[in-house]
Amino acid sequence: MKLGGTVAGEWRTPMEWEACLVASHFKAVTAPFTALTPKTDTDAFCEIAARHHVVIAEVGVWKNLMDPDAGKARENRAFAKAQLALADERNIPCCVNIAGTRSAEGWDAADPSNFTQETYDEIIAIVREILDEVKPRHAFYCMEPMPWMVPDSPESYLQLIRDVDRKQFAAHMDFVNMINCPRRYLAPEAFIETCFRTLGPYIKSTHLKDTRMHPTHLTTVLEECSPGEGTLDFGRVLSIMARYLPSDAPVLLEHMQTFEAYAKAYDVVACAAEGAGVSV
Image (tube, one colour):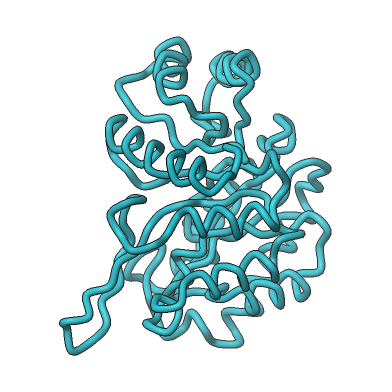
């Protein structure tokens, strides 16, 4: 698998990004550009990645397509379509977003409306609208699972894929986001295996991170953390992933703020992979 992440560090230009990329040792990255980036810069980023045999694995949307402000929702959907078209043009396999929410509390808010039938039907309609308008041939529109939003389990994700019923709708894997209860946290490897066994043929990109629980609280508190700072056994996790993913599948570290933090996480995962005999 191709291990990487988001290229962090002090960069503003494609040339400065290249220096950070080389130092990172990443072989898969998130796109350092959007549909709003000047074409000359996008061309340069893509040429740099190709020169270093690095895969640009995903283009992010990260906007609420169900924003309660109708104007904002239209604007966000237009951006999602532009991002998918960009991914398709650049042969980037995954254009990823979350489902979104009707809540006014934030683009990724935990809201009771997130699990209503009305919201589910709107999610399906939005995804179909995006795919039917853009008509991608190479890129797939994917949805990152969330702890409090559809899809929140491998089974619900598979059902969503079937209900959307569009060839270019596929899966983005983030199993830590779906470890949203003590039952899954305390038996993570069985749950992670279920994730990859259920969704393996549809997965276009995978996020890799760790998780930890605070059992001294009277209520459950689960939090994401960097690899090596939680309780996941990455040797076992990577062995599971290797059984279900192609050998060149992109696996991306995320949510660290500095180059040094990414480097530390990369070393943790690469060491675990070596110990487990998994090629990264």
